[in-house]
Image (cartoon, rainbow, N blue to C red; front, side, top):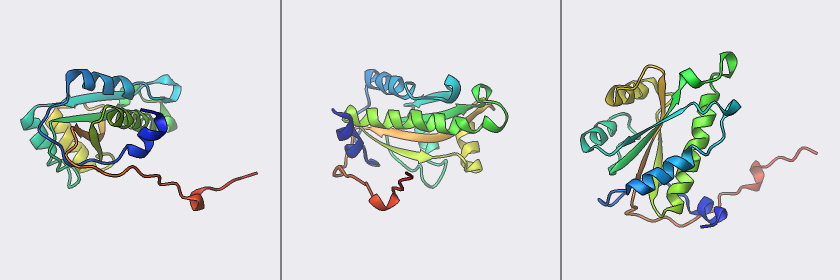
Length: 169
């Protein structure tokens, strides 16, 4: 699939079949995610791959946005021990977001579906996810990406809006 096609086809999918995602596809997704850029090449990301049904059920309770039924969730966390110091510490959010977008585009390329459910900065949701996954204190969950074989389709779309473009010459 060409990049432009993947960009337009990538849509939030919230309904999945019961077919599990293959281990090979999971590895492809993780490789794509870790190909993302990061400030000063710190790579402050950690990925928690969840296929356990009980854990997936618990994650559905993490926030009002996470009530998704899938056979796979990847939780993208920022590892604060690898974050930049001082006023640059929050760059982990950008780094993990870039990794997440790479993962989502790779999902589309593989013919799978996914939805990005934000966790950070909702402190109560962060705490719930941390408890469910027994995260180390320095791993902050940015999002839960639910992934699977899609059981719904959406038309590709181009969301370009010229009014949001400002040229400075």
